[in-house]
Image (cartoon, rainbow, N blue to C red; front, top):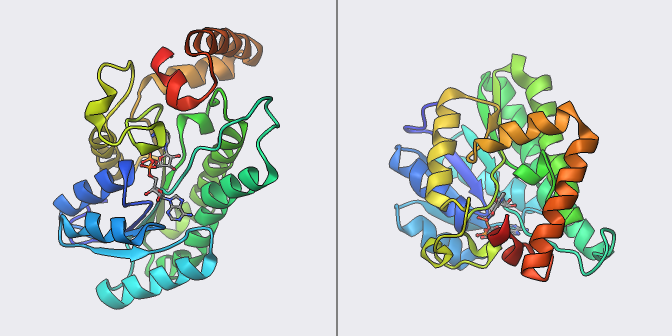
Length: 271
Ligand code: NAD
């Protein structure tokens, strides 16, 4: 999809990768609505390119319905909805140790928010015979995130839901992409600016991710991998699951040994 003159919503658009995508898509000529739990930050990000910033808690279906209605009233039918909001949960100790509230929150933000968005925009897109659902997941949704079982499980579910959308609605003219980055220098990893990341290995800036996403959307590619090596890791996993698990155990030993924690804000420097 060429984004010029297209109406686009980006959730979690006030910060990090969402803000970078909003800015990059607006530069392509899209009318971008930035939606976020943090209304003031959404407005501040949107103001940098003359867009609209709106409050939205993606875990509330009514908020998503209201966001879609307000956007359509301002800009007409939505061409692309990007479900990007997300959060890290973490594990206090063992793999099942995050609280029920944390597991539920991860499920609501990473999965149900995508369902609510699709429910809000799909009927109109199907009627028009076109539309784009751009879903943020993570490399953790294809592989795994050491130290965050709830994040990994819900990002896997996000990838699966994106596949269901693509299978069920490809013939309706609906395009679907799922974005699966590894580490990116954003507040989610504890960075308020990408410069703070210094020379951390394998870490991309949000702007680099936004550029890869723009290319993926232009090519209407399902799997968007800002870190291309993820494709090889995925092949390795599919070829021999047990070997892959042992390699992940060795990686876990290394990163937790060096960092002294499983906190992803620290271990990413040792991957
Ligand atoms: P970030 O913390 O900079 O941005 C996340 C944004 O989502 C924030 O503005 C936050 O207010 C918003 N948000 C959280 N819960 C919300 C809710 N209920 N309703 C509305 N907005 C909400 O983080 P980021 O790194 O830019 O993350 C963006 C997406 O990218 C997330 O889905 C994350 O899981 C994914 N991702 C990030 C990385 C990484 O290393 N940073 C890697 C892979 C995937």
